[in-house]
Amino acid sequence: MVESERRDLDYLIKELENGDWIRREDAVELLAELADPRAVDPLIKALNDEDSHVREAAALSLAVYEDTKAIEPLIELMKDRKASVRYAAAIGLSGVGDKRAIEPLEKALKDESQVVRKVAQLALNSVKGRQKI
Image (cartoon, rainbow, N blue to C red; front, side, top):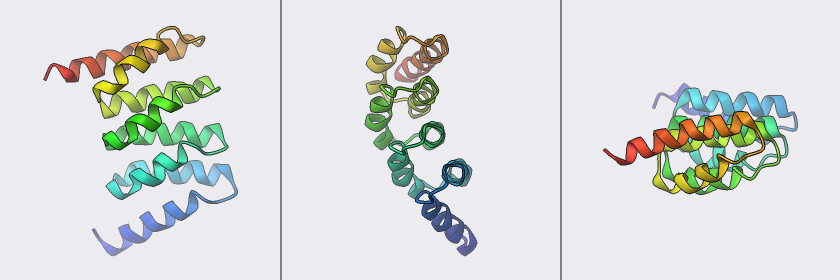
């Protein structure tokens, strides 16, 4: 890794502790673009952020990494009070593609939000499709 990329990664991880949720959300989104595996743990931690925008962005960002460490935290996020966060968690689970996501995604087919139900179905199809490989 180039030194400037390492500094960028370190800076973005530090930004996750910023008091401004917009800056934390931006940092999470930029961590997805860097696609550096060292960002996975800070992104998992961001799933517990007080702001739903940050939780949503972190779930979407974890889909890029396809790291199975994110499965359990993303499954837990499927219980979030905000539909946008549950939607993002379903996408994150789809991106990781682990079979442990099947049961929570099946439960999400009964979610109160139509968008969550639709995304859960797409994610479920994706995860099940990967299991046949």
